[in-house]
Length: 267
Image (cartoon, rainbow, N blue to C red):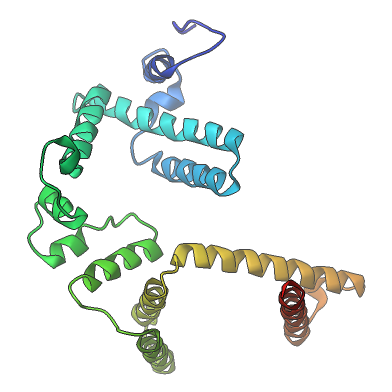
């Protein structure tokens, strides 16, 4: 049995103590064996699940998932405490100092732009250093968006959506050429995706959000397509490629027709 007192209601100190107890000798073998890298994906998954709670505006979901994110923070911090490198108090100290530094006008200093504060904080003296500082662990769409926005601050940006789309077409042509030549398409495909994110950034559209919505639209249309096939007494696996494309086009047309009718009704 571990040394932990049961209560009707727990607080932050209890959660911190519980993490330490679970990871200590005699606690949970799995918890004690974990490293930063072994549960790295867990951290990301919990953060995304918390974001889903925000999207749903579901307080019960948010409370649960924010708790899981907090657990990850305490878990990783306890790994470092055990290694003797830093503690939770060190984390809190550094964060407080960072927040104070980033709000100079509120704490007796002179008002400065956010970019100026960040550059001083990170010791950055060149634009390239600011680009390289964007976290490499970010989703690629977000990382490329942040990099391009930082580059745009020094004037390195297209002046119109048309120019952005021209660049997208240029990269598409280069990808086609690479495929035609039998070359590895990875680099040209990356350039195409980077150019697509540039279009999104220019239009002030979150590329990650846009892609998520495209995923939801695909699932919705695919479901409608499968339902139509079943109503005809067919399974998707039985259909030819041509039949599948025909069903897809039909569902897309129905969706567009429905959207047009809805807009007409609303006006």
